[in-house]
Amino acid sequence: MGNPTTIVITISRQFMSGGSAIGRKVAEELGFRYADRDILEKAAGLLGEEPDRLAQDEERGATAWERFLLSIPLGAVAPVYPTVPSPAGYRQELFDAEARIIREIAKRHDAVVMGRAGTYLLKGHPGLISVFVHAPKAFRVGAAMEKLGLEDEKAARELVERTDRDRELFVKRAAGAEWSDLRNYHLTLDSSRCGVDCGAGMIIGLARSLRESSGAKG
Image 1: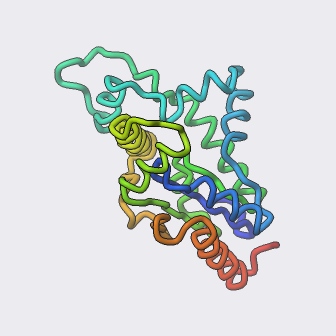
Image 2: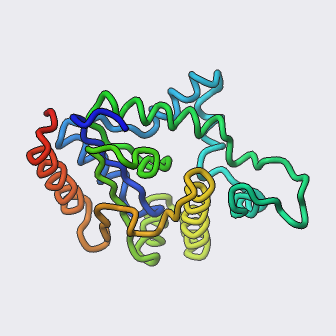
């Protein structure tokens, strides 16, 4: 899988845990490519669609009914509704396009890849560092209220829970894996304890150690 001379850091994160900020800082400090929105934009080009339209079909786009369908294991048939169509919140062609782009990035670039089941798509890549960023729910609810301007704590909590659930179900459906199983990651970070700078520093240290031990380019 990929070129062993590249280091690719995949970051999965709970909603409002600060994982995106950590990923950006890591990419800036190491001079790595930061791959997030551009993955979607390239996929849109491949599929001939608008990026904003496709964004609705990514991991956060499923409705409650669609999330129920996504929870059905691969290959299983819903016992009560055997003829329902595939949910709009999960599009195989979109996932396939993004998977192709992520694997191409891993072949050519040292990179930080945000979400999109990258940890599982690149499993076996010699230079992979998989990271899961998490934080207590109360911390993330507070962050949602502050950063999104939400005044209703209950609404913020529901948003946090729903988004986490969508991400969990996306990875289960797309990769057949448990998103929150920390055994699937090389490093897990509680951002409420370490913050952006400390969290990024630990990832950077691991990347530099891997580069030194493997002779990776850079």
